[in-house]
Structures are given as structure tokens and as C-alpha cells.
Image (tube, rainbow, N blue to C red):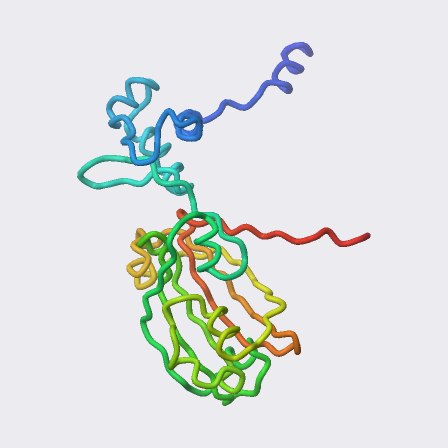
Length: 248
């Protein structure tokens, strides 16, 4: 092989897989509005003809867009453009959904008072056996299930919490009823695979992607009043994290 041929080979770009190219083209059509929210994508056979590829390649491209949350499939009707992901910042779910121009909702699955085990005690900075309130809710946006929240509160800081309104913003309930000032929250974000029970609650495909946000909320006295594990549908929610840049 000549030196010139070797040089050309070294600078040549790798060939883009066909499914990546097809996913990119369909993504551009969705982002530009050519394919609007709720509209069906062309049938697989038409995409095969348009891009001159096999049905397997088309399905692989559609799977990429489905994982991104840009499309969803109906077993009998075809593939449709999904609504854009709901963007939520770290904070009150109710306020963030309202800020996004949507209507928040909550369905209470269970609520109880019990003693803290080791995990919950560590999350709330209390001793094992400390009395806590625990509850689980399904959070909705315009009626669509987006998150499964399992939340724990120190019972000594919010006595009688479970007797109040548990279908709205718990932060608002804590502020209003107990005059607590919430000043800081910390969170750990993990990418997970949804188990069968959570998938069913969230109306998501089994074993699809999820975002797990483990939160702690503190008062102005430094006490941790809330420890929560929130699981979101990764295909329907984008979590926005903002913070100021530290001085170097």
C-alpha cells in the first residue's frame, strides 16, 4: 500500500451505521415539526423503501427514538411521535409541573407511621427506631403518570402530617401547617431499570429506563425533615439541575 493510500485511509471517516443515519433523519423531522406530536410515523415498509434498508434496520432505528422518548409504539396502530419530555428542576413536583404549564396530581397508595429502619434513619439523620411517617404516591402531570414517590418524614417535626392533605404539595403542607422553613435540598441521581411493579404504576414498558432521585430536605435549623426516593419515567421526564459555579 502506498504512503498516499495509507494517509487517505487514516483520515477517512468511519461509516455511519444505517440505523443511526435513519434515526438521525427522523429525529430531525420531529425536532423541526415536520412530524408533529401525536402524528404517526410512516409505516415500516415505507421507511424500508425510502431508506433502502431492511425492516430489521428500520426497527432498530425506531428503537433508538423510543429509548429517547421521542416516539412510542402501539402494537396495533403503529409508531407515533411522543410529547416532548416534561422538564422538572429539583424541588416541588407540584410547582415544577405547574411551571411547565401542566396540571399536577397525586394518587396516594399508602401512608403509615412506623419506626425508622437503618436506611431511613441514616437518610433522616436520626437513630434507628425513631418515629417517622412513610407514604407512597403516584405523581401525575395532566393525568399522565410520571413519578412514583416514596417519602419519609420525621414525626416529631411534623406531628399529625398524615391527617392533612396528602394529594398536593407536601412541602406546602409542611410550611403551612408546621411553620417550618425549608432551606436546602440534596439529591443523588441514578439511572435504573424499572421493575415490573413500578412499570405498571407508571404505565411504562417493563424493564424500560428510569431515573431514581434520592432526596433529603433540610430546615433552617439544619434538621433533615424529609428523606425520599422518587422514580421517574426516563422517556417522559428530563431532570434539570442548576447551581452556581464555585470560585476556584
